Structures are given as structure tokens and as C-alpha cells.
Amino acid sequence: MKKEMVLGPNYGQYSGQKLYELLSEETLKQRVREIGKLISKDYSDKTPVFIGVLNGSFIFFSDLLREIDIDGEVDFIKIWSYADETKTSGSVKLIKDVSCNISCRDVIVVEDIVDSGISMKYLKNRFEDSNARSVRFVALLIKESTKIDFTLDYIGFTIPDKFVVGYGLDLAQKLRNLKSIYAFK
Image (cartoon, rainbow, N blue to C red; front, side):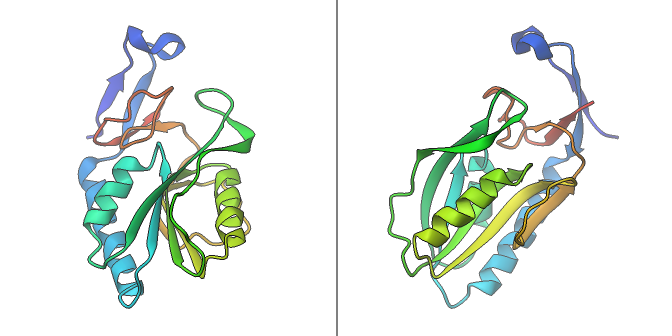
């Protein structure tokens, strides 16, 4: 049976709304293990730079790194693309850039969710323009309606076009700490 929760009064205009468990903690753990094994196999003779996209990917990123048994560097990039708490603005703003040199390096970008695809396209261009040897993408979630003109290399789950929270994903910086991923009804 799927778990449900109701948002309390601390959630402003969203208080009283019901959420249901879309992906359980165990389901997430299993898929993260599988992706970690795939990356380890694909990069067994390389030392890639893993770049986590902040803030949403931080839990997935750390869990994924613990499942990878090859060496690699870690860095972060922070971008912003939301006009409000639940809708994309249609443009991307760079908040924090990577600090390592990625020229002639294998880069693996780790993202929490691909919604419109605007952020992923921005990141692809950003890292290719930096002369990376290769750029591959890991996304925990991709929405069914997402349209991008390149392939994501590792995808955790394809989900319905619902707003989701938990496991690092937020609603106005809240609900990131949930161990499962929940969707609004």
C-alpha cells in the first residue's frame, strides 16, 4: 500500500494538499545501486569528474557515489530555473560554477530531475564549451513529457507529469528530507 501524507499549515498555499508515495525508499536504493554498477563498469579504466547539480541532487549524488567502485573527482554546480516553487521560468541562471578544470576530462553530470529539459541543455552546452573530453548525464527522474534533443545516459525512473518532492527534491526548499519520493495528488 502506498503511503500518503497531508501538508500541514507550515506550507502556506499548499497546506492541506495530499501527497502520495510515488517511489519508496527501497525502490530508490535498488535503482541507485544498479546505476552505480553501470557507471563503474562503463568507466572502469577512467577517472571521471562527477558534478552534482545543486540543490536537488545532493542526496541522490551522495548515495550514487557510495555505489560506484571507481575513483573520481567530485564537484558541484548550482543553477536556477524556477520562476516560482513549482514552475520553470524557461531560462537558466548560473549561481555557482564548478571549481575544477574539466578540460580534456570525462564529466558525469548528476541531476535529480529532468522536467522541461532546459537545465540539461544548458549544462550540456556549458560543459562541452569547456572542452570536456566527454559529457554524460545521470538523472534520477525524467518526466514523461520531457523533450530534449540528446540522450541521457543513465536514467533512474520515468515518472508522470506531476510535481514531486522528497529525496532531495523540494517545494520552496522544504520536504527534501523525505526518504521516499512523493507526488501531489
